[in-house]
Length: 545
Image (cartoon, rainbow, N blue to C red; front, side, top):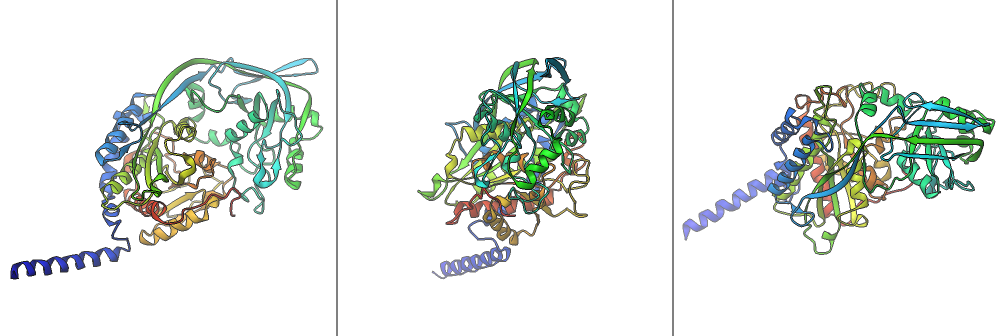
């Protein structure tokens, strides 16, 4: 009897000691096991494999990406995640891979009975997955935006049916801090794909996108030219598209000179037209007299293939709330091998991939479960145009309307540093070794608040500067964006650009694993809050700026 009492006392004292130790971390004891399971040693081991020479840069539809798919699925199974479809973690995606034939791609302008041809790369860029020629009159459709939440519509009163729509890139008033379009940042309507789909809905048969003539930043073509090897990548290597994608209308991005020529019948310079729209925030859309354009897309190669998103889940503990979903996401693909050089993609986005895997293990290892269901998704073909996440958004395995938040990791492994990508466009702090960027919180202040509360236990330096970016289109460039298009609070967690971005030197030796561990612990606490608390973040179509 005395022995039992002593043992009981010992266990009580031990329990008090452990509880006191846990309380010192500031983390709820229900979550502590998973929180402490997140370790930089695991991240290093996983990323050393994913970014190794053997995976050959994980180019979509190539051998290395297939190895990555199987590795992620195996780790999900080992962690004990529930397969999303039967006994499989794979969401199969039909793809088209194609390579344009530059000598056959062309734009032809017909005016006054004369034809004038324009050359690929010099005068325009763009691809389309099918051989296609469209010839139609051209209408100018302003910025190509229909935004009822802002009371703005470039297509109001414009007949675009059967026409080719010429539109400016980006949004009105992007240099005005007081603009309803997120001040000096941008909104969903700045996205080229959104503009194409809007033109389709208005009956257009083709879209020409011109950089804004009064821009105070590089055009998309000029920005891309800053990345070594990017033009080679565009012209020499295959593009990819979803086999059943929404976009059925060809789109080319055109030079300033070609835009000025097309707008000639307006009697105004392109800069004057943009100034008119921006100053009054009223469309200046119009048909362009005696202006017919032929857009010709020809591919030298074309094949169908299949890839996959890798998805698993941990079911919520509440019988009602488990029907709601919180998503952790990243993408596993990168740039493959070019000219004998491996583009390892350790940061982009091996870091995000191993981050999703590590969080899956952490939540699975935790004895308690949050009330809502957690979905872990590593998407395919992000580098080819966010194809895996667009596919999921079009074919959700759990209803989008019950998806409460998305935590998307893309490049969470480095210290942000000045580079050609950001030179003159964004101020980078001298020391970013403890810094994390959150992109998209202007659309969800409640999301930001949840991260900041959780960060009291982690101590990262949080930065929101990329929400004031209109030059690099960063908000649109990762896998959270397709969810934001569906009014879901979806934020990109990002440690920033650096000189090794999309270069063979993006290797595991350059990763800051200490910071990665902190980021994932913050994501663990934030994701738990989203999945367990009574209220969840809301999406604001009109951003707070």
